[in-house]
Length: 392
Image (cartoon, rainbow, N blue to C red; front, side, top):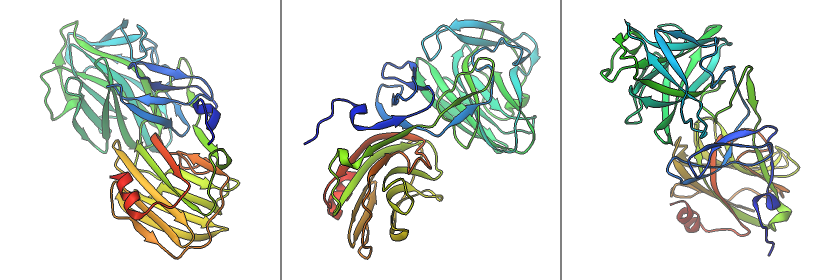
């Protein structure tokens, strides 16, 4: 039996830039180039290996809200007034002024049409209601409660998300479709009397001390938020994560086997959970993946010929832990997810002989954009009952 002392002895991992992640101590940390990120949630539970596509933060001052890039409207701020999610004393407090008005800060960015997501870390500083909005008064928005950690409302095409990152901090985000050439990343502060209705036109008079702490603003092209990319004067890009294992490292059985994965997805788009392939080719591969309609599937291609294409009957559930198990052998393919009855195909032959197991991608394409908590290879065919038991 082969034994490996650590992650890098077995797995080949590359990422051409540094990247952030939430560590087990609840602090947002930075992993250096080519160092994998094992991420945890705010309660210290291990989520697993974080695999993400490349993204760019289009906001040039993500932490310095005193910069003239950010316009303050009926609002003042206190710089470095509390500990930020990364443990440094760099979070700013946005304080509505004493006028009876709408209170916000914003930054206009030239962008093309398409889907975008803006996000910021926020924490109550006396006031606990905050709005993310794009564009003009008719633009998409979402309103958040930083006490309950909930979305109060979302509208005009906006889709909000809120997630605790510990110590009273939340990562809040807004996804929308941009149809113009300029976009305003706008952050509104509301007082505690606001309940619902018209957050973009909500007037109130600040008390001069209460506000909201903010840190780490981000604007990225895409239909979901990814990990934080810090900037300080220019845009910045986080490179994609790639992880793989040579099949020679774990004794692959060419006659057939089984794969099990436990994962959490950040999105409902096409994504690969794991793929066995030969010479990085699309014509020799065994893939478990989420298709374009959100179904968890098994796809097998040998020498350019489809040998199996099975739907588990289970859809991806964003933000939830899911399990999938597959079997592949001559005239014997199966898939089950989340305890579903195994879908079986007994017609396909032969099967590809792979040299690589890609983790959270397929040949570096359609990355998982989520966390892989567990991945197991069995050098034998598991029965339908065994597959179903693994995923229950």
